[in-house]
Image (cartoon, rainbow, N blue to C red; front, top):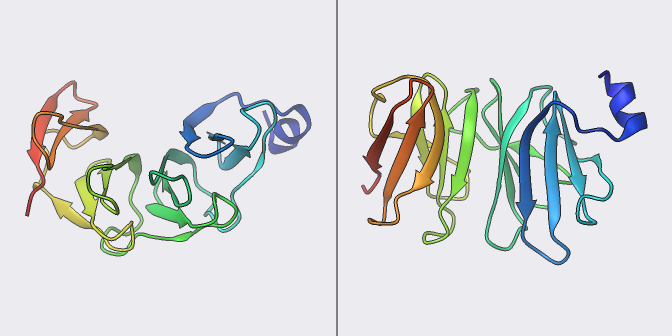
Length: 174
């Protein structure tokens, strides 16, 4: 559908990212093609929420534990940050650049620590709430890093999934 069709129908066909953000009420963020939409009423209605975002597909959205700070991973534009619940967005990709970010993961055990799965690049970590990023773990065994999960058996260790059908453990401790 065109942007005009999306605006008039409220449809979210072609969904790329969907995230529930903690708070009261729970907010929902959904990306469709090159637009980000937000619901503040439990997904009954959505309104645009992308002021400041580049014209790129938002592929993943993560939030801090209280839902105040949000991060959006984009296709070819790196990470963007919102400190007002998704109202406005600013670039948050120092040390990373304009990469294709497939997934963002906030570590609840280490407030301010985020991980980014970057297509053809590997895994990046930020220890300062997304302001600065650094590659961790070197080149991945398969370049197409797609998804991340915290390994519950060891603090500071991630499970990393690739489009090549592999999963590996990555120790991110300095």
